[in-house]
Length: 183
Image (cartoon, rainbow, N blue to C red; front, side):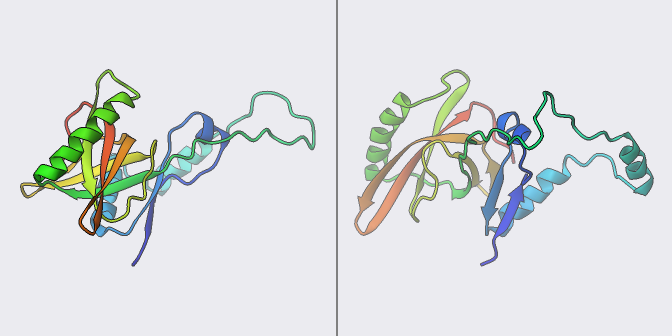
């Protein structure tokens, strides 16, 4: 199984303290293709050798503000190390038992909401050992009626595990912005 890493891998204090950057690992070919198309959608200008040479002359490396004594060590700050997970899902109706478990978990998830304005709680069920944990960022890719939809990234706020015979199922409650998903 081939693993692909997609995202931003530079490490700097600006990345840790100011920017929101992500790197995720997947073995799903469709996810890799979708990520490539997403990145290509930002490529509006082809950069040939002439433009690159001109931009190189304009570039100025960042300067650090403040003085540092020679040999002094930089202060290391703890970085928020939330994970980022993509889940490929298929739309399906819950059974009576799944619906019952869903409602119990949903009431708990509502109490744990972080951003109440302009966000909703979305849920999905997972059967194969959940890797994500609370506060991780989840990107849901849903196959529905022959189309693929991508939901806005959200924060995993609650999980509810339950057993259905031999299978352990996990209901995942994700707080996402209340916007339309993209095809």
